[in-house]
Length: 169
Image (cartoon, rainbow, N blue to C red; front, side, top):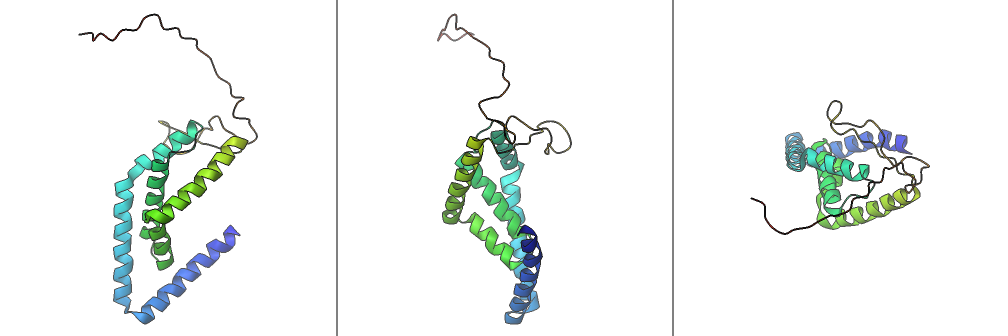
């Protein structure tokens, strides 16, 4: 099914482009595509790499990302779809940026991720501080078929000896 989508998507984008050129002039269509690309680029720069890093860190800790992180990630993805030339990708990008639709997508994604984490079938990759660009590398605690409660861990017992609210100067 994904391969069929990969083959149909460019054909559909080309068809919509030709129809838009018939309705409007070629220069108008190019101006629309250029302006949506610039808007998408600005959105991606505003969201930045911090969104991707925050999502990776929450997955590496074995938890579902917070709503604000997921909203920022979807806005970033919406900017990416706006940056891609084409009208269908622009519609997808706008849907990801609009708050109402984005809230429904976040709710759906949180349910799917929580189920995957509960089953232990959610695989997380992290490579913080190593390699080029902090990409994906070594696997963290959650792997396919591994129960999340059965991880190797070292327990350290810490006993509080004294607490004080005095300020040390």
